[in-house]
Image (tube, helix red, strand yellow):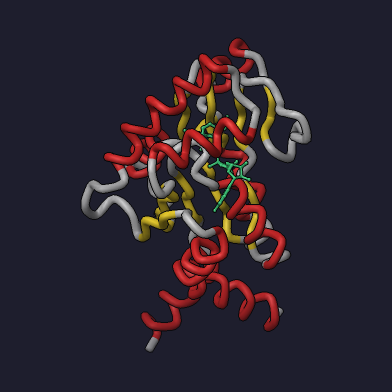
Length: 211
Ligand code: ADP
Ligand code: 5GP
């Protein structure tokens, strides 16, 4: 009896499980994530990563990323401020401890949008998230979408497509992901994403309603 109470109490204190969203650049992670955060206001919180890349039009510092210099980022890494960090397509990216703590302090489901190197690093920590891979229907469609997005130089686009090849293989490793979702039709992919997370969503809603 006591143990059951203790376990329940402890897990409530630990807060909701975080979610790691990963997959090739252009697969649709940001699109799906924005939809989720819009529908479930006050359920999810985004872990704002640091990056050395330049902001895209429409992105805001502190909301989409913390845009920093290589020197500032390296100094933060050396001070132990980051849970994980990686080099992707010529730039540094990383999740700070503060970014995750800021979301967890609000008792929200913390969403990390990270690449596969980040996934490998997070697997070695005690964060214990739900791992979801978002994949494009094919390399051809991925290239079309990336070109259509018009955010990358040709050189950068090719780097991202190269990384995508590796990522698509990575997503097939057995046992790595709780769900692998192919984002062909956006609405279908969104429904699959929601159903992978529905238990956690309902838990957060229950806690919010009872407090
Ligand atoms: P990521 O965050 O994984 O890099 P984005 O969310 O930016 O990818 O999506 C890449 C591009 O593809 C965007 O221009 C987006 O509007 C578009 N897109 C996303 N999902 C779909 C879909 N299911 N069908 C068609 N276009 C899509
Ligand atoms: P983009 O430049 O398109 O925003 O992101 C490029 C890649 O970096 C994406 O695959 C994205 O998931 C990944 N990414 C963004 N933030 C982080 C981070 O904090 N850590 C890691 N490892 N990857 C990240």
